[in-house]
Length: 92
Ligand SMILES: [Zn+2]
Ligand SMILES: [Zn+2]
Image 1 (tube, protein in one colour):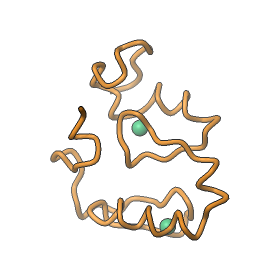
Image 2 (cartoon, helix red, strand yellow):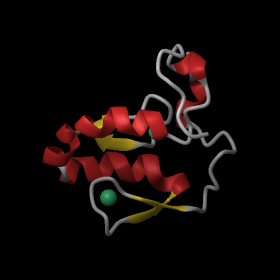
Image 3 (cartoon, protein in one colour):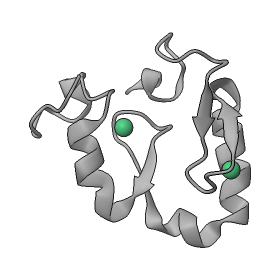
């Protein structure tokens, strides 16, 4: 369906540091991020329940009540077919 959703797809520098959504003190390389997320989620199950996954980028985890806001400003919100263009486009 959307094979690019979880791959780097050249968009993100694999060496770039990304902040962990579960712990602000965690800075993880982008290439390790999916692995770290699955581990860190185990340690932060309560927080994990509060988080939703961005439909544009599986790496984006945001608080559920902030998902709408995130979607409207998501930097990856440039592929309307992923979300059938229902939402207004945010900043590209
Ligand atoms: Zn973490
Ligand atoms: Zn996003």
